[in-house]
Length: 134
Image 1: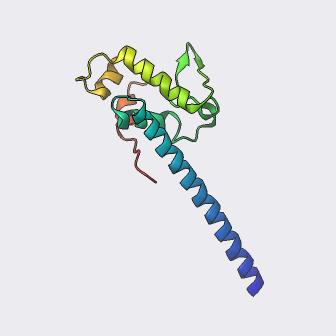
Image 2: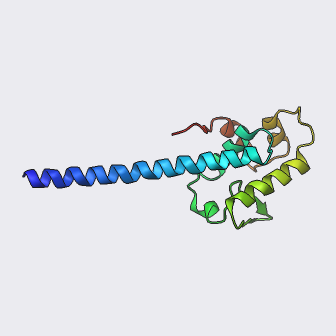
Image 3: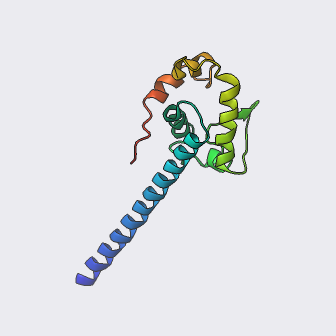
């Protein structure tokens, strides 16, 4: 009886450790992405990070993550593929520089005005996305 309890307890500890390690690794990756967004000079980095979290399902959507496409950028109907996730951030910087011409314009309004997403409620959903540490 005691051995069975010990085995179950050890399995629970191992599982908990694995889950916490995954959470920690994801938090570190999230922090790395945010830091890179800032270092690239992207305007409104917190909102842009909200976009990353929304578009990638909190950095977990396999379809976009395999493509290193943190912003769900497309060419026509096909999602773009980047060699590294940093390249997608750099692409966003170039995209932002081309399209965001009035730095006094509210960035949420800008995203809505240019129809960044095909979804009419994209900005309202985006505003509810938390980028805080888990």
